[in-house]
Picture (cartoon, rainbow, N blue to C red):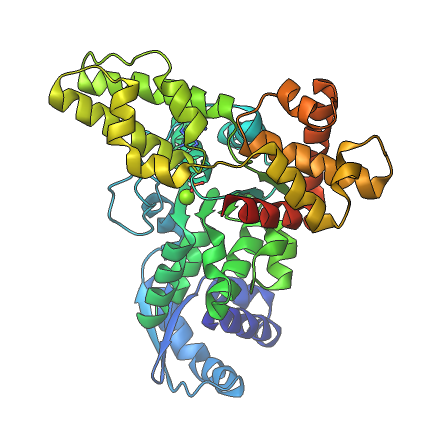
Length: 445
Ligand code: ADP
Ligand code: MG
């Protein structure tokens, strides 16, 4: 990169011209770009530029050529360095079209609209901490989880909150795809210096869906440098991805290990309580928009029960019900839900039973079904049993006591213990995690 090259040459020149000359004439120069056989530099004033041209022109050219650049001429621009201008341009305010623009933020994606439950409480707490804008305690914050579990929501909530709390801070939120797009554009327009300077001038950088840059080598490389530069300056970084850093295929090892240096939190799949909470919140929001539409008892519970895939689908379902109900001027009933959402309900339909889960899990771990239900407590039996308990809780609508009865008459606290145990292992044992994912897929098809 030209900037690095220039930094090296500037160092060499220090040795040749002495510290005080260097400080007066060379250090204030900013390298803009090399194009064809011209190196463009920015000098703080015409006077400095002329002086450098007269006194150091040939020396600088010699160094450039020594480092392999076929540069024959220096060209000067004058005026304050662009680095200084960057912070203004980097404002997060959506809609500003100058310089480094943050991706537009969705007004709905704020903390007030984020419903907190067991599956996301850690991610939420970490996001809240970052949003305070106080001294950086963990860097980066790495949020991961499946589609539609609230990663983007939390990141944008951080951006909104920081705008409130710390208007002095430059906050930049963008997707990894946008990062790449800007990088490629900068390369094409030979504005890589600007790109670097702008990205290094933010106080908080948030990059969404970072798995996107995996396998894109030069973008990864640039991301890595930007990342390191900001971490070195103690600037907060927030990253999201659809899986844990170590599990992103084709992501360079050094990047994935840097990503794990801070706080890594995952958003777990939603549970019934969270889904119901979200539905209640959204229903309240929609009611404001649609006027007085009443929802029959049991409708939200039914939806929370049946639509388990992701929150976006859940939201879409509710949206459709409101639209439909306002169209025909009737309250939202369970019958309407059946008619109106038959497509969504069909794909979310799961007739998985506890018995089926037990059978599949026993088969998968190669143990006897009778052992799974029996009293043996050796690890080789107990582990699969707990996995089966966990899946029963996740994939069926059975209550803990009901599940307990089907596991050879065990107490509901035993089931709860098993479920918790597996939840915990999912976080730090990638084998278990993989097993569960596989079994889940086997059972859902
Ligand atoms: P992701 O980025 O993880 O794929 P999003 O943040 O885009 O998911 O969330 C998908 C949709 O679900 C958004 O409309 C978001 O507002 C909503 N959503 C997800 N989790 C929650 C939550 N805990 N509370 C309220 N809404 C949520
Ligand atoms: Mg997202």
